[in-house]
Image (cartoon, rainbow, N blue to C red; front, top):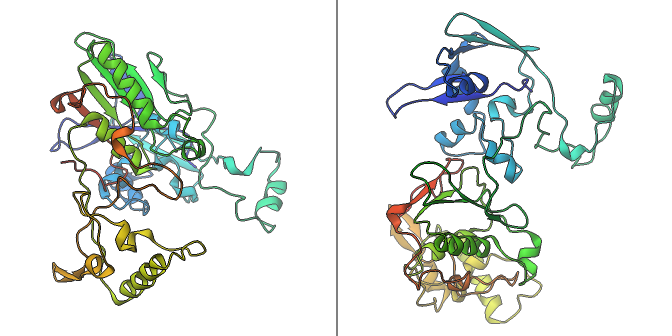
Length: 382
């Protein structure tokens, strides 16, 4: 693990080459000191080439931009229990091959960083004071499957980012925060920060516990009452979770607009066989002791406009020729009126108080969504 030395990338537009500076230099530059030098080489390798090669290790993100963005620090990630210092500083937990890291700057100066390690939070308290006992505990013994976790502890030298002002309100489990911005021309701006869509266990079991979307609806209602007309929705570092929370938020912002989700699955012989078995089981009302994929049950699936169900497995399965492939009939990704096994209602229109009489609290042109392309699945809206 590299000693904490964060990078920030500065660029003017999509055509300008990215310049890498350390966080310390970026802070000096923001404070008015323009005499800072960019990082041009890391361990003797061009900084751009080094980081692009490092980004290739991020096989857990399919989108190239997502892999690259994850290299850099993101303080918001700490709120959702993610690594905030950038993947470049983790090196995927692998030994980089040398005991030091050498940064070379454009002005010819260099800085050597010592390679250190962090203790996995899942391993409990660090009680080993010598290398011998640490080796015996972790390298010369049979460990339980959960002994080492992929989420390292944040190094003690890392300073949590300071928030200029406390949130106006937030979710009880730090799943949502609402802010008002200060400054000239910003007195009509509200910020809805959503670090995650992951519902807690209480959210899924108790109807009395306020969900993320319900808390967001209350904040929006308050923002309207406080004469805010512009909204920034911050979902940077949002690792996902319960997608229904996102749909509910969409229905709160645009209550007069239907939510349209569509999908197909590949129509193969194996899927056809599975679908026939599942649908026959449902028809016989014998699902209690059977674990199966509900998306292959025709009568539970609905058309993209949510207005009709499929009457038979053949209606859902097809197959249809789509781009030279056998595909199912187009259907909605979710049945919004259906109640899941967890008793979470998917009824979107009842997810929060009506703030505007059904027309939306904020005009679409006054809503900005701040994203960081960790995932590319929902990068495009509309």
